[in-house]
Length: 359
Ligand SMILES: Nc1ncnc2c1ncn2[C@@H]1O[C@H](COP(=O)(O)OP(=O)(O)O)[C@@H](O)[C@H]1O
Ligand SMILES: [Mg+2]
Image (cartoon, rainbow, N blue to C red; front, side, top):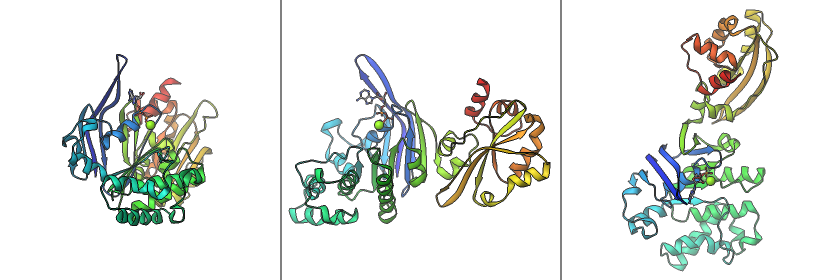
C-alpha cells in the first residue's frame, strides 16, 4: 500500500548537509498497522512527511495505493491537482493536534471538506458521522480549548478521515498524552484499521505502542531503516535489535565461568516447562537473570535471560537442547563471540557480538 524506493532527503542549512533519509526502502502492506521507531533525529518525521510529499524527497520514489506520488506534477507548494487529489486520500495525524482554536470541533473536521469543495450540508453530515465514529458526537459544538488531550486527538483523527483516506499517517500522535489516554487512542486507531480496512503508518519512540498495535515495525537509525518486518517474525529473528528493545531482559553474569543466554519463547513453547526439563536432563542449576512476557498479535511471547554454570564450550549440548525444543537461543556477553568463532553455523547479532567484543 505504501512503498518507498531508494528514498533520500538531504537538507541544506547554513552550508551544512544533513542526510535525513538515506536510501530508504519501506514497504507497508495493505490493511496493516506499521510502526516506525527510532531515536530523535533518526529521520522518522522526514520519512512520514516524504510519504505524503509534504516534504519533497531529494531522490527516490513514493508509491501509495498504486500511484507513484513522486511522478505527479508539481513541486513543493505549487503541487498540481493530481497530487492534491492523491494527498487527500492520505490522512495525517499530528502530535500537537494542530486544531484551529477559533473553530468548533465540528468545523475543524469540516475544514478539509471545505477544501474538497463539499456543500455546507454535505460537510455537516460527514463531520457529524466522523465525530460519531471517534466517539465525540456530543462535543461537536465545543471548542478545542474545552477538550482534554485525548479528545483533541480524536478530533485530529476525525479530521484526518474526512477525505475517506485509505492510508493514515501518524507522527507521534500519542506522545503528548498520558498512558491511559494513549491506550484508548491506540485502540481507536486499531479499530479504525480493522473496521475501515485503513492502512496505518505510525511513528513512535515508545516500544509499548509497537507491542500494543503494530503488525509490522521498522527501526530507523541515522536516516536508514536498519531492521524491519512483522513483529512476530522479528521476535523470532536471532539477534534482532527491535526484539531486544521490545522485550528488554537485563541481568549480568554473576561471575566468570558462566554462560548467559537469551531464550525467546513463542506459541506452544511458551507453555512447556523447558527450563526445568533442561535442568533435570543435564543436572545443572539454572539462574534466571531477567524475564519479560507479553502478547503480540494475540500470541504469547516471552524472553528470558538465563545463566548456565561453566564456559560456553561446556554448554554447547544444553544450548543445542533448547534449540531442539524450537526455542530461539541467543548467546549473550563474551560467549557470543566465542560461539561465532567456533562457527556453530548459527546466525548471531552483530549487536550481541559487539557487546561481547567490548568486554
Ligand atoms: N527542515 C529541516 N532543515 C534542516 N534539517 C532538518 C529539517 N528537518 C529535519 N532536519 C534534520 O534531519 C534529521 C532527521 O530529522 P527528523 O526526521 O525530524 O527526525 P525524527 O523525527 O526521527 O526525530 C535531523 O538531523 C534533523 O535535524
Ligand atoms: Mg519526529
